[in-house]
Image 1 (cartoon, rainbow, N blue to C red):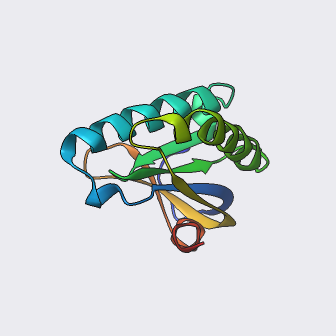
Image 2 (tube, rainbow, N blue to C red):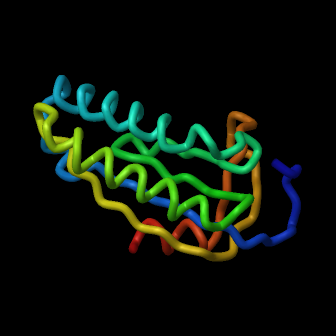
Length: 128
């Protein structure tokens, strides 16, 4: 990742949200999040670490793809397949909403010094 600057870049953002997560018991939330994380790790394994920023949202994740903008579509399709084949068979079922956006962002560091992004690119992806 480039150092924080005032430079605006265009990247694709994949936003994922586990459906009805907050209505589940804590033990079910843990099961769902572990399954979600496993599927996500598998789906992004071919995307170089320096080409992605993953933000954990508690009930999902936002993945910013800084390299090939097509990576967001490829990862989303891999995840969709995993969720349909395996996620729905989990107890409770892992049901996920996904949105993809291509838009402007700025690279920043969060309060812990970790890479982060801000801007319309991620804000719109969350709403899709």
